[in-house]
Image 1: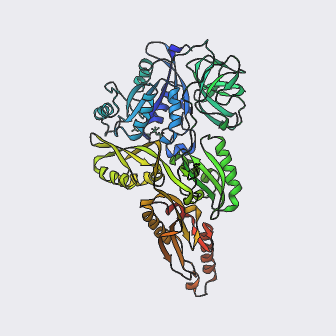
Image 2 (image 1 turned 120 degrees about the vertical axis):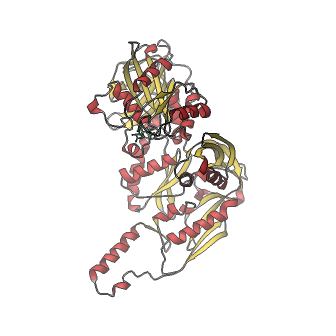
Length: 597
Ligand code: GTP
């Protein structure tokens, strides 16, 4: 296809504003898929995504459209992941296209993720077409929302298209706007090959599939290509486009988006953002801005049933094949036995992986406190990247510790602003900005990431009854007064519960932790001291009193079946416990104890 008849675009939106529904409509109305094959939310391929309504892997589809000007156009839609955890993937897919549809739910208005994503689109020099969705709903307020787009984002919304992705109103106008308002790609067919590696994933039949955007030159089957970041050479086995099923074609030229397979063994061998060129007479310089995504949140995953360790290893190996941004290494915990220390792009990423292991592989997990990476500067001048509080060196050798900070953007209705500010303040936040758009406030905070990884998001949702939206980006490291807090149950340290905290908040956190544990740990036949400590110094303590827990006592020795039932029940309850020294700690304790109220 010649460049003037190609349009490449993505859709940016806040979660639930209708991105997938709109994409489905565009596909359907252009007869890209026969109606009978159309299933809702075609672009969200994984079950878990559909369930959570979150698009995780970037997906793409090639749409053929005969425009009102009588010409045939190829429209390539790259579906970007919607959540900040995948910000790097978003930014790569943005660089692969020239324009964006900015979808805003006209019953809701601009939200935090709308902002985060639209700024990425603006960064990538996109032409942006605002789309007001859900106009079929009585609560739709197009004028108000258009004005808000102008006020908050600062782009012209006078020509915003009014759409109902549900009924199909405005879909034709949207297709026309893509053709008339978005620029055609630029590129040179005769120049050496330069293609961007936009995404890659593992397909059980084809092996690793690589999504590419050709900038200059051409790609053909059997070509030998080089991945510039690591110099590896691959021969293209298969090349094609998504309609949205894979369809082989002979050549991909400049401005085009498609896939290749090249007998690549694992997703790890492909780096999102890498430049692909020809083995011979290739490009001299790679496309700029390549940086692999780095895990920022770490936690331990341990099987509840230690016999499932090998199953867990197998599950993690398989998931990692398909997710280059997920890292892991084996970990042993005195308390939890064998497991894995895993790194994630953010909390959502952590949750998705944990859910998949529990559901798809049927392994019950204990998740330890999420931790960020601390920079620990030692007195001898060395520096340690601390991923696990359990590895914290002896403080007498430590000079100072730095922690990562984020810039968080929160949008919230006026009424709840006070609670949000209080929450941010409690979490050591520094306010950077506070502005209003209609009855909504937007506040920007500088916050320590470690205060956010525990339960910030849950708390935010609960104090605002679900009305707040939140997005963040990492900004850098800053020195602060951080200490390791350990928890001892019956005098034994439970390494899985140790955490890094700010010194000023240590007592408060320690007290909350021991009080929670006192409720969560069942009584035993002996007294159990529960303590929080910094170094050798106990900062909070509770004692769980002794109890003889004989569940059969009240059965008067009479009914044998009833007795057996009760014993069985008690045994089943036991299964979810872990033994620490002589004490059984139930699994929920690990998760609940870390939440703050
Ligand atoms: P993520 O994939 O989670 O980012 O969400 P999304 O932005 O893709 O939203 P999705 O398309 O899943 O739509 C969210 C909800 O809004 C779904 O229940 C849709 O059925 C509904 N919806 C989408 N468009 C419209 C519309 O035009 N009118 C109405 N009434 N509902 C809509």
